Image (tube, rainbow, N blue to C red):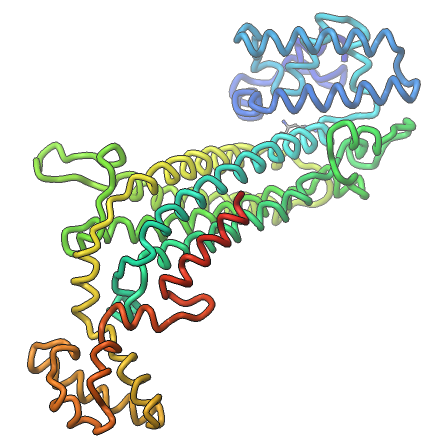
Length: 465
Ligand code: ARG
């Protein structure tokens, strides 16, 4: 297409077309209003391509210089908000190319040698996503560090651990928080792993079959920092696995955020009263003056739905597509953009919110005392005195039943009463029945004893830097 033709693309793609696109079809098929976000990657990719074309003698050094100059001006125009994005030019690629040609003439028209928008867009999305993954990695580290700090401050604070949301055994609040650090550490690992598959270069695949020009794809890969070149042109232009993988990893990350949110919301409720969130993360009610609502974790729990939805959107986008590129793929961008935006905001806000949690140790401990949380400890005590575990389990079940009837905790039963369940029970049982005794006893790798929590804090600190 000549400059003129590019400008009038909507009227006719080429001599082949005999009627212009309707306004509705133009709007329906255009992507510029969302994909202009890729402009930096688009220019970066074009410059690397032009540099290689010149090195291969496919364009002149003068053409390369003109393209570089034109792209510098376009960069300035976009950054200053002066660039005029045109719906008529459909997408970010055609908008930038048309402006380049307007600025530098024939050199601009030579840029597209050996390239198609199909490999161009795939390259742009990968370049852009790679940068976002790196930023997400930093934010994930910040969130983990914030949680590790709170965990350290609460290595000795006891709250009830639940299974089936029934009081199970006492755990350290620090231990509980470090469970989330484990989850976020795996999320970070997943991001690092999938980044390798994002970081491959499609450019050179051209429209679908490769190109007859002697392009140096390895050179372009090196210039752009890609660690590999896509090895099959059909796959190169049509592969969006990397986007699906990313949104899948992002969904799992959001699921972890959502589980933490659910706990924060429960813990802040009057029935639990375990924590308070700083006012700046909450809102009030327009009708109930006493209310302080945990809006931020509630919204994060809600936003998890939209990110999980984006995986469904992207994976469904791919399922019926024959090779190679199809316009369907233009639909990959908005879910990806929204996933990245949601994730980054959520990670930022959670790192800040974690640092502002007020812990209420008395309320936590009171709750831990309610549900016979040390019953397992009594069974273990009897096992250590020689009883088979199943028998010990049965003995303790009787003791708990009687304690419930008496409205007392196991630790409140007098020794002669306890001895009636088994003569092996002695004075030292009271240490075992205490919350702190129970906690300290779990001094095993991965256990909740404060000593272990502190060891894990140190390990995470060393890992997170
Ligand atoms: N805007 C398009 C996309 O996002 C660019 C590629 C268009 N290629 C084509 N042959 N129509 O996928």
